[in-house]
Image (cartoon, rainbow, N blue to C red):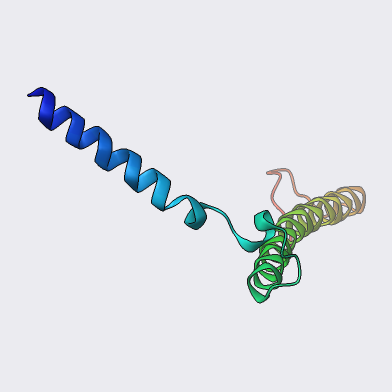
Length: 94
């Protein structure tokens, strides 16, 4: 690569970085807290938090359901075993 080509590439990169500097920051970074873009960004963050909390709550409730279901099945099998609901082959009688 020639020296002139390298200089041209470096100058082009420097101009792109210098010209696009304002495009890297949102209005909040410039101090405009009440701009519509800042309010939309805040609403977007809140929406994403609601989705994440909803998914985590559903995940937790599923495991709570599984724990309750396991306890109910264990109680049912204990009461069936105590009442003679199991025959010699260890299968449940209907």
